[in-house]
Length: 577
Image (cartoon, rainbow, N blue to C red):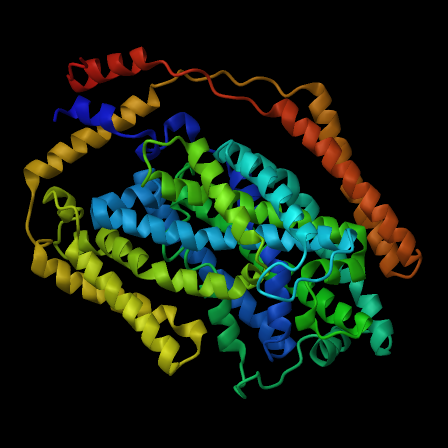
């Protein structure tokens, strides 16, 4: 097959990102903020309250763990993503081979669908509270109204995700500033309620605040099995919470649009505003709601917690947070499955996946977000270790990168066996539990890397493939040029004046919301009045910002295949017939 024939035969889902599609920092701030300041934060924040660690352990442990996560996002995932401009699901063809690539994509697609379902289900708990639908305590739905709520939410999220990366990014960018404000209000409005409910007395110093948190929020005590958890466990939890995204490289699907690997540092927005500040806020809200409602926190869902302390604006926060979790999740699931079902379009796969994810969201068991994140990450972590080993380590030890591709094998048995060893290790840990599950990912990663180096060396990675390597480089360069020139650059259109005014009004609205929150927290405004005003201001924000985004959003131009052929013929001496 000639280079041109290979280019033409490459499905759209396997194309690298075109130069014109590289995205600015703002979109990544919005995406990482939107995805990680999200529905699962309400659940995980409450989980940490039940962790049995002191407030000091939580604060310091989360800070260190999230720093490690940001570094992993940047120097591992973002670097490979910007080197290749491919999704992981396409990149795996080079490493695992065609057949094992499909196996991985299916495993990831199913696993990640559970997280998307969790986002929808958590959003549904807020609407459930408004419509007086009972809390869903069973693993299956006990109310037809709850099912209808889930179906409506799932349909809306599926439609947004079907629009592609730009639409997902724009939606997240709209929601993030408001979500940050709501979690901020969740702290300053809830603390006075906690003080009153516990009779703690006024706070005069940081020491008083820490004593309040240690006595009534994060109370140091043994967990259910009698084990005492500490700061090292919190570090492991924060670092491993997104192991599937950074160590296992699944955020290549987003970071491939970055102009350079340093955009990986934008993950700090998600890690520190979402996995630090939002977890703390959700923990304080959860502990306070439990006291106010005289109900164990384990028996409350996110909607009940936020309504107790913030009213209807809290319910809106849960709904929006669920959307911002599910949207990029749907996008990743679609990319993964599209690499298997290549004859279907992105939209078709999104709608099909959306149907099954929405169906799964009807079962409240998917709200166990922390467990989903942990075991999903461990299941796919070994493949991430294999890819990182081949990309970074092989060239340094004299092995050939993409050796299995050059050998034209459908299955990379060295990688397959290494992944199998990784899975067996995880199963052994689940059965024996010699160490806490927050630390399993470290030895799992090392085992995967070492076993792959040994097995790949025995199976052909030490050999050189100069002709195959040259052929592949020519194809990749030709495909990149073809994709770059499929459609001409579209000139930037000026932002409409009306959109600028609406955005200014939206952010002025947020400033008023913050000011009222501070006034209320100081005791100078009635709490019920604030809750009503906060809900009204929140609606105004989304109306103004939403309309402005619609005005600014622009679609790309039509494909011009003729110009792409001319580029290939002139620059690569390829006859495109």
